[in-house]
Each structure stands twice: as C-alpha cells, then as structure tokens.
Image 1: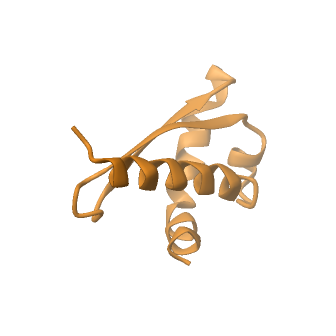
Image 2: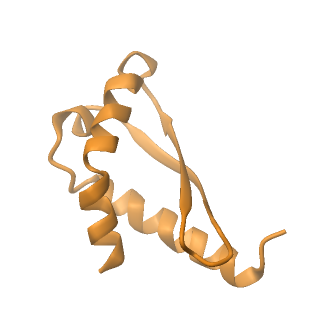
Length: 80
C-alpha cells in the first residue's frame, strides 16, 4: 500500500500531465480526447506508470503513438 506522500505526488503528477497534454503540438494527440486516469510511482519516485483513457477508440492507437513520441517533452516539462 502506498503512503500518503506517494498518493499526493501521484495526484500532482496526474494533474500536471493533464495540463501538459494541452501543450503537445502533435496532431495525433491534439485531435483525440485523452484523460489521465491514474498514476502509480515507485516508492523511490524513480519510475511512474501512467494510465490514460481515450474517448475515441478508433484513434487510440495513433494517439498512443503520439504520446510515446512526446514522452521526452512531457518528462522534461514535468521535471521543471
């Protein structure tokens, strides 16, 4: 079971990623409604697993590809 501190960090990461998705310029991401549903981090905060939900199922695969290509940008902005 995650500690209270980890839960708060997970919630903050989730909020920030949701805000950062609006700034991604990849059309595969912009044209799809994406919701960050949950974030799980390891206790040492080294790794995070992000769960996303896509409103349009037919565009989910290409949106996921767009998210993977924007992962470096998202990591950098989240780190700031």
